[in-house]
Amino acid sequence: MNARPTVWLLAFAALAAPGLAAAAGGPGATPFSPAVLPGRGLAQHPFLYAGEWDTRKANQSMFLVRGGRIVWSASIPLHPSPGANQEFDDATLLSGGNIIFSRMSGAGEIGPDKKLVWDYPAPPGTEIHSVQALAAGRVLIMRNGNPAQAMIINTATGVTERVIPIPTIVAGTHGQFRHIRMTRAGTLLVPHLGEGKVVEYDLEGRVLWSVPAKSPWSAVRLDNGNTLIAGDWNAYVREVSPAGGTVWEFTQADVPGIRLFNTQTAGRLANGNTVITNWCAGDKNTEDWPGTVQVLEVTPDKRVVWALRSWTDPGDLGPASSIQLLDEPGDAESAGQQR
Image 1 (cartoon, rainbow, N blue to C red):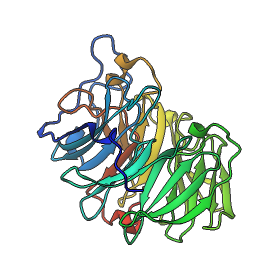
Image 2: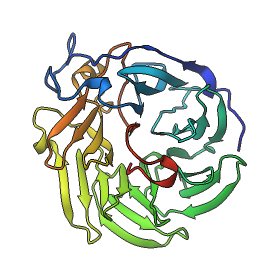
Image 3: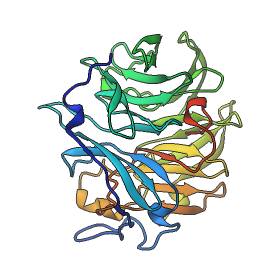
């Protein structure tokens, strides 16, 4: 489907202003992190950032940050119509400069000029929280619903090239799945958010591997053959071996000075560090949000080398669900980045 719904292009805005990290807290805020954090705030890395459910604002945004400043942003309405919701869950900058994204109500691709070049509206009763770039102009999306199914779509033609059924016992569409990823071997790594497991499927939907994992929001197959899982409301990041054993784990006990809320995504960097998004929007008291850390980068020995807290304009990024560090080697289309 290439139709462009009128709810999408409500507000695009290009920003070019200094993006300084906000100090912890504010009037009435709870300090969930120290006043001084490791790293250089927005200047630590260039990155693409997106998050879900920023209830402080009528519009939801994703941001491109370079040189410590927000240089580009794109926005959609949180409530495009009465009773309807949308949010940015997954976003990736492609090697050609376009950005693919999921927004719960669908998935799409936009160019640097902010023109929508591909759009897939989610059919009624379904949700899309995951989109991954594949080779030859294709994408992988996960369509929550009854039935639930992964889909490989050619964005140039709009043709759905493959549908992979993903079984689930979770009847409620919203609680079924978040980020799924195709591995370099051509299999699908699927976190069953509501069922507490991560399952690897072939493209016929047959189970190849499975591991128990509480509330898995994302799972990535690493270059070493292990799998990196982010545990959402259970606030952990865990690396498991093919045999299912835990070989590395990061939890609240490893970072007592910074409150972990929902660890939604985790990626492994080329230097061996792990970057984690720490989504706080489940805390309905928005006055507390400025005291929280949105992103952490931790070393293999669990030392925090970067903790990002950026909650005030012109650098207000909102809650964190997805981050792509743009100084990492490899391109997104060839699974060259472990995220």
